[in-house]
Length: 288
Image 1 (cartoon, one colour):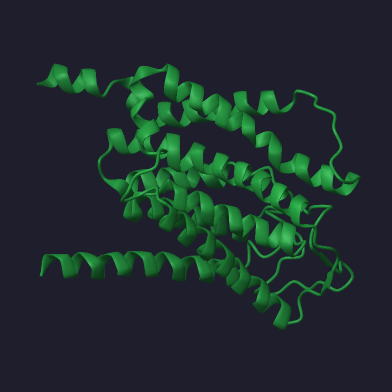
Image 2 (cartoon, helix red, strand yellow):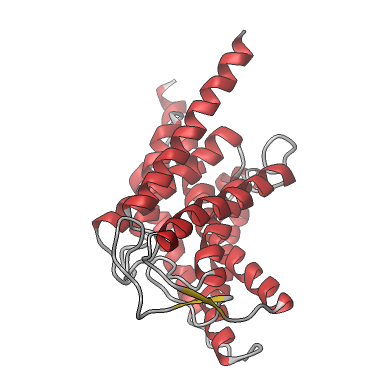
């Protein structure tokens, strides 16, 4: 029995190896992003913003190869496919709505508090749809890394889901250590965001929901409102931020944006609590 356990859970199944492997695959993805591709879409400002998001296709490419070509990883593919009670259109739409509402609450609070001033720039239907796809590629790629590949591999080795939730949230936080204007509060916010996305995967069995929520959170603040996305300001957006009238407060960080604020942390904690308690109520009803 000991031999079977050792064979099933070898060195490559421990957390340190999974963390290292995920990191190496992420680095390999980054190398593909460096391949020069020259193009212009609609305008220079649009192209500059588009190029912030679309290179994340390389993450999908590298990680899908790792999943498909390495036999012990192929079970992960099932967690990415459509499933009636998990990865379905309903949960995808719930994710899109949740991301938009959560970020919208943070933005509205900052606006009403007088921390930010916005002005309408322009709305172009086809360019916006194309940009939304690019943001989805970026956001879903980060989910593929953390809640797809790493989460599933840790869960496969350590059945307690909170191990996978905690470790993947730390890794998600670590991915943002190089962001501009990073500090303690933004890191805490990003960690809690990782916990929220992991809980969506755990309780709803739907990485699609996490991908969708991640997408609309990023799209709303960066492309719709023109606010920093984890410290990165886009040159193309529907609304633009008046940079001369921004204020640090509980709801807005002049360097990092809506994220990394007490308000955003509170929204994440409330959202996490809602998911956890809603699941407990649901389980209680099933047991009756």
